[in-house]
Length: 287
Image (cartoon, rainbow, N blue to C red; front, side, top):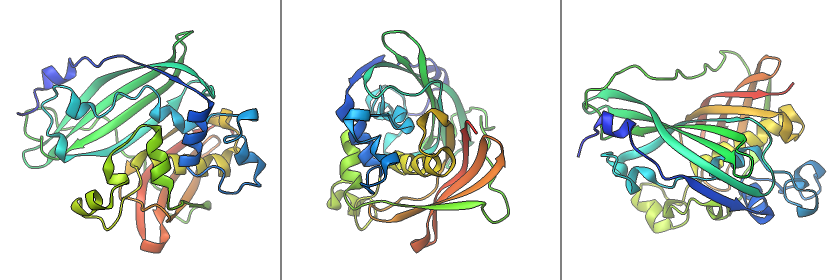
């Protein structure tokens, strides 16, 4: 079955309502590296229920519609999809517990051509269930490797943010731990690729890999530490492109270029393998 662009753009997603508590917020924080230094008071505010703050990138797992490319009638060859880009903008700090509603829609399609794949842009808006106030807007770009040639437009909706051609202004090392994927999956992504060594080997890896959005969360963690002094209220937006997997236990280095007050470019890499794992990053914060 091929992509029908009119049908896909009109696709109706079920509204997702989710109630989450302080334990959920702490599990997410642990799954993105908070608390690895149990003496760092700035990190403890995200893992101690008596003074709890929510990690900003937790918006990515709230009111999530699941593996909609497989579960809904999309016409997408879901076996061949990969998460290409991801953008997140916060409209207010996330509460550490509460009830939220997520509404997802397809906002654009790009046809790279026969044999070259397609890009599907899905937007999710997360609101507070009690007040209707908007909390976050998320834009996911899905690269559908088996779905090019359906006759759609060829120009992309977004262009990658350039990484400056100079040495970074700062770099911060963010160690991951061997159990990180096993903890992160408790926030909702139970793909066995991140837990079962046999499944990982079938996918071409010698061991399970870290979730892409866990890498995204670790990058957000490092940026908040380096530029916001761990103050989540200053965290506004983050975006970029996934470029290579991370294996739990590796150290992710975040290279940062300050561009103007309140904005920075960044990339994430695993220096031990000379691998860039998240590229063309852009971060906005209250300076």
